[in-house]
Amino acid sequence: MCGIVGYAGNVETACGKPLEVCLQGLQRLEYRGYDSAGVALTAPGMDHVEVRKKAGRLANLIEDVERNPMPMATVGIGHTRWATHGRPSVANAHPHTSCDGRIAIVHNGIIENFAELREELEARGHHFKSETDTEVFAHLIEEAYAQSEGGAG
Ligand code: GLU
Image 1 (cartoon, rainbow, N blue to C red):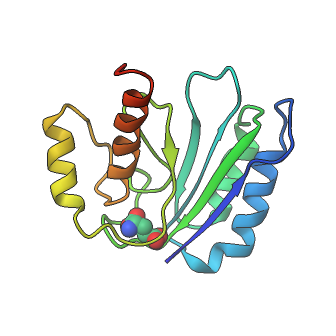
Image 2 (cartoon, protein in one colour; image 1 turned 135 degrees about the vertical axis):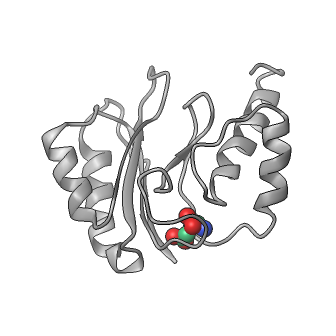
């Protein structure tokens, strides 16, 4: 179980709204997972997705974001985690990212065959940063995206 929120509204210029909406949404959804909380933000022109995550309660993330502001954005995603695969920690907190940092994902549930998928992805050169089942998605999407761009990456 976890809490997931996303914002992709009618914002043409990067601003603080995606982060604000994500944090407000996570406050309402915090009961769905107290192990960690995280957000990811991006905007046209950024070469990566900016991720911030903290172990423990959502308050830890909010405090961190207030102390060290995040970039303005046009879209955002957020997550509160109830761990199933991998202990509660910053490394295992969502969002999880692809090798190139251009894809960030949050996930609710369990990927039953993640061990096989991870082994295959590692054999193809992907580096994992967490113990979660979820992270395989970030790398699988990275491969699919590279193929759709004409084999780049
Ligand atoms: N299986 C994922 C994890 O352990 C998602 C858990 C959840 O739904 O919060 O990170």
